[in-house]
Length: 252
Image (cartoon, rainbow, N blue to C red; front, side, top):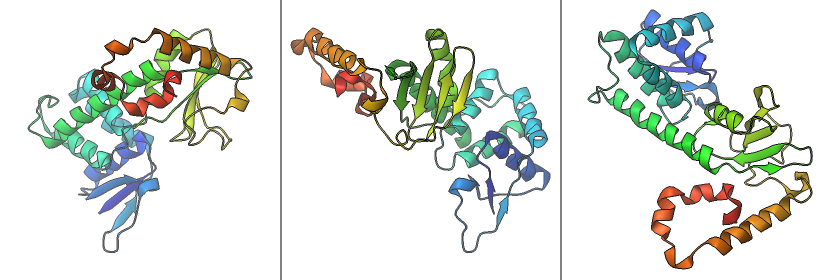
């Protein structure tokens, strides 16, 4: 049986609750946006129920450490194939065991959640390091990103603390949504503008006058201060993989 839900974390938790309550044994749990009906497989749509989701989450909070509980949420946002089934099996193991299972890596779902959590944490850290803002004509500092995972929900606090006195926008062009800070609150937004979706760089036409010159000067400074004889490209790529170069003005 394949269960499909609305793509939210609460929706997945509702699906897990229904599996327990109705003794379902799904072969696949997937979001509605990725759902592809099979010819012979039975399917069922799960309607999100916040109360059911909270009951599952409450049970997980009792069994897991705060770090382990957050790790499950991080893993969900990885959007990796079959991550829902991994979370389902992890939850099943967690609920049925009397002791904490977070370090029982003999269990495949436990090991996989740990691996995915580390992948997510690494991507979040790199977004903290490699995001570069440019000032737009309406005095908002904007940056575009296209991370491997859906990290937008986890990077806001870092930039809010670092740039508390500036309005800024970080936009995920791959998932076509972003995080906007207006000096008071942060909010998720989706721009009704096709110029943003899928773009590696912000269009020059929306940048503040002089911003392109600042970029050019920074690139010149970077080249002038680099020491050719000390270049170690192998080490450099370990710290700054090529897929992140798109964010760095000195690299293009």
